[in-house]
Length: 368
Image (cartoon, rainbow, N blue to C red; front, side):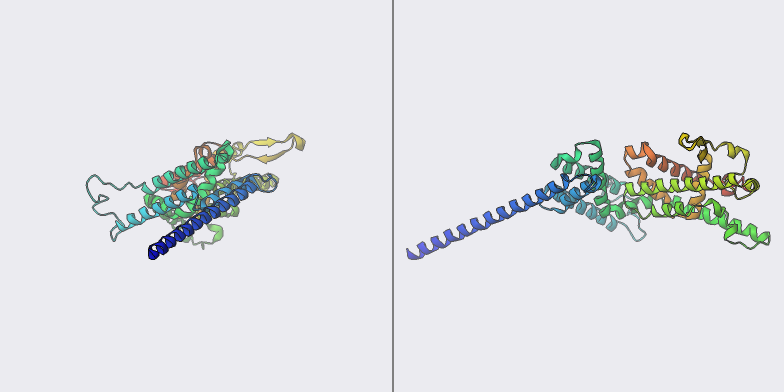
């Protein structure tokens, strides 16, 4: 009886201890949640001059994803992990040549590997994570602007984890286009240098097929930086900067052309015909006393200058970059504002270069 009594007391003390531990864990979890909510309130209730709204949204999203105990953090972590696991299984199914066994068919006749599988996965991840986050924090979807900023913040985190997997799939899909474009540019340069040698002229930087004074260094930097960006928003920002730098460079050349009457006959001018001159309307600012102070580049001249910069920059994955933007840019970015116009212009120039078999006649026919 004494042993049974001691055993019962031991069990009671053990259960009491377990209850204390459980209560302590609940208390700690509540305190942690309360502190987390207080920090979130500090962010959301801060004034615009203290924390810009875009940074405020980014901080809230970051805190939600880093908290693995929250629903949004758990969903984010699990979906990212599952996407990487699916991509890993996909790589294991490839043979030594990087191709899928049985000509993309595997397991059975009803199982077909979709070449857009990773992109579809990422679209699903972006949509599901954004919906979960807004469901938990309705304030992030209170206005159209907040929802757009939330979507941008989610994209930054998701592509920070999955960009390489997605871009590798896109790059493989358009690899032939990019390879052919690089070969055309190489052939174009070699043909030009061959002509120079036949004319017994030494090729130099000043005899490059594209006139040096037509090229903007800032535009080249922006075009090259598109490959370094990892989100649609950042890539589109570089596209906008690319066109802005070209326009600024054109305006500078046009101003110098107008200031110097002797430049009219120069071969290297962007404006070398009266027809081109008429394509450039002039804007007048009433506040400037009616003086014409800015010039607008025509669509044909802009397309030509974009093609010239693409040839000089030699971005080896430009088709893949624009395919990525076309895939993941939102309808608002694609159809409205400077971003949509910049992307459409780059797509038009790239389509022209992909289709052309003779850059000399198609692009530079008026410069000879």
